[in-house]
Length: 325
Length: 278
Image (cartoon, rainbow over all chains, first blue to last red):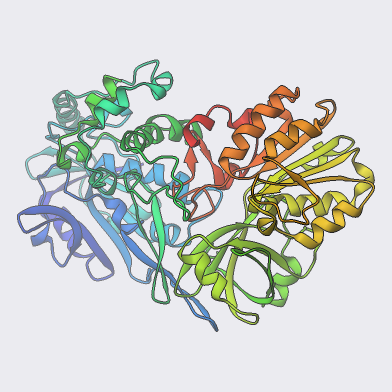
């Protein structure tokens, strides 16, 4: 693993040189809010930020995509255009860690070709979180503001305008020029101090009760889900949620995000629905993340980014709800 | 790498009207290679596409040995199935699969095998029954108990007649009270009650049941009364599915994806989540 010290303009020049061959996605302002979206220059990219509204799963498992065109006489498959490779700039550790969770599903027993192609042709440059948000709780789920899982290159500040780069993969090596200096011990300890400060700033913790599994049948879920308006925002903005629908629009078959809170999610054609009540839908979301995903893939499908709580219109708080269950 | 969502074109070569709302479609794959290589086991299902309408999940109702074609029986209940009922011979559809697990036929050998079906629930059982009958000598007593709402709602009538004629299997047909016709020679009563009357032995035997949830619920109670252990009871679950490959999340119950880990389960496997799906 290579480590480099670069000053800000060296880093910017390096990234600028990549615009020619890559499509660059980065955190950028739109209508007063921050989103990960394609950018044309480094001027559009924001450096100091907590989690943008969307997360980087959008660029691997997009909100909607045409799978194929199906007619009586022909079937034409659509694969993503990956001729121009992509770089995701300044991804946060929670989002990159979630990609590893999605890999287990989409590159598992059945390989999802479009997801796999996008994964293979995307390079991720992560940026450590100096000032995590109040709603963050990544540490209690095994992550951290300076964690690097799922990144090809990680960038951590040393001091103002000076950065420590970790080149973590071959893909990362391909985009970072040989330059800068090797880190001095003092620089490493400065970064370490910033890391500790950031970790200490994360006060929220998710504590899954030891009898969580047995609580499945408890009336608790009816109470806590009362406020839910089944809008699905928590699932759409979640970096680890991955449920989807497959629908036809004319002759195009489309895969689009779906949510377990929807009234049609488990409703069958003849009208039967074993998960009709709202509390059952909400409970499914919680148990899918904190129980079933762990049983099936070894890890909890929540990375502690806090978006579900931040953007919930009725202020449902996943940390409180799980901790008090 | 092949895109798993892209179906293979298949041509409808025969349509059989089973009941007022069930038709059986015989499909032949258009690609020679696929036609010869397509194999499946009884209990598996396919995703069936109608261009510009959508995709639905159906079990394969023909037997694994029925080479060169597959059959799906489709009950008209919603958008896609209504569109399927409009299709004609020579129309093209899309098929992907086979998906899911299958009935453990090896475990059934040298045992009494009891099939308990209701309505369109006979479709997955039919695939297995045909397979079992083609290797009849490998099994002990074979009992088929099948019922429907009315005489008109019984599917695979020709085969039912054939099975009834055979001396080496016991076939008991029933219709719900009020569903009989003047010349109905079968029983009148609900499937669970008829099962209790037939009273198969729980010793060295295995039951395979499929039908509406309410029937399954009472069949399970009856089987318990007759001394069958949960491990001896197999069923195939119907649940809303989209992807068929354990990813879209719809059929997830507990840590199980019905499409990938099932649809065939023993009652002991589903006991833990049967409350949630009933």
